[in-house]
Image (tube, rainbow, N blue to C red; front, side, top):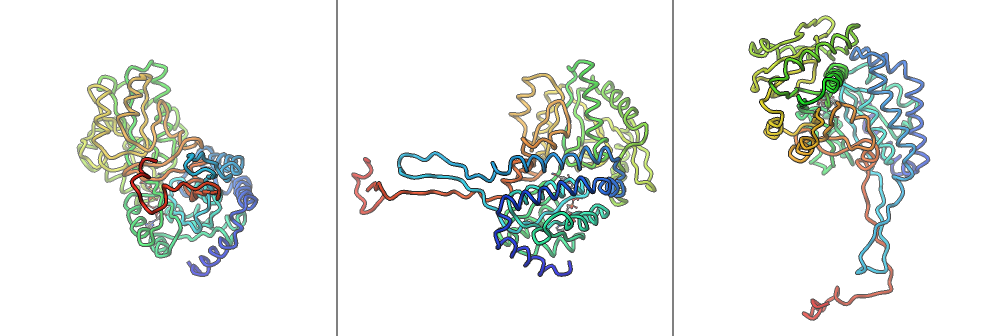
Length: 454
Ligand code: NAD
């Protein structure tokens, strides 16, 4: 935090100089990020392994690879995003021209989380730079190797007069929140999201909150055996194969029909054994989260519902992929976001009952539904609310630039990825250009009822 005031002043001067508005500058920064991802790939794999035990292939799939794709997408589309968008105006204002011009917001503050500590930090940075802003990044203190890597490396590849990193935990975050920002983009918990929003309100700073929640998976028993096997594969990959369940878009729990539950459990166990025979699971981030997850087992009714797994090793911060069948709905495991390798399965009489189940709970970041029944699919889209819905897959929607990513209600608000990131960090300025030629007397006093007949 040393020199924070000076650093912020330098950022404001950089923004004031206008250089970040230039498309060439923005592209050069994006190319710098791409070079960082290419040249520092091994180091990124190392820090992600140190922080989370992530395998390098998982690290590439979820962080490095997704980021390279996002930077390339931004580079390909930036000119189009920056171009003024002409709009059609009514004859009433003829002769006129109207357009929407995206202008950068200014000085933006980005907070990120520890579960994808490189991916989440740089994904929003791509948007902030593309839109021509100057940036302060505050990575999570819970992934210290990644945080240090970013602090050391970003200045080597990105203009350090325009992007600065401040490492640290809540005291650093709270200090940063005292300042006036033009935008705060926060990824993390609802608890801290409230703190961020309260601080932002003081300065009327707009915020985007990327929060979490309990993302349900609905599995229809009418699937063919082939589709059921693919479903199990995608659920296991989306749950345990993605930072060991420590993902905001990870499946939190499953809803299945009672008659199908034991077959579903068998298919999941078979896939878990196949996928993780070589122990390629990320680990729990730290002792605090290990204890938080362990406490979920302490409820005897929850412990009694375990049908697979359950073993834990605090020394290595490992929790075995664990499946529970029908834990009590009022137990913490069903009321709080799990964010770890535990998967409760809740049985229903009819799969259609899942809609009512979801409607009675907070709006999740994502809903996953494995079904080929188009009528049921339409009902889920129309009758439930969530940041996103994916049919017949899990988590992959995060990597698609064409789809907006973000929550609704308790899972946050504001969208990013692809063009949505550019928009999140821009002000859509309306520009109207009038001519002097035509005057319509209706708009001018003195008022006269005859004017209403105009
Ligand atoms: P967190 O809220 O504890 O921390 C997030 C960030 O806030 C960190 O950078 C942290 O240092 C900072 N912070 C901590 N205390 C603060 C304070 N008092 N004031 C301001 N900032 C403070 O969350 P976490 O443990 O890093 O992440 C877990 C949560 O994040 C889960 O709920 C998960 O679902 C959610 N998440 C959401 C997304 C998404 O894209 N929607 C992605 C990852 C994680």
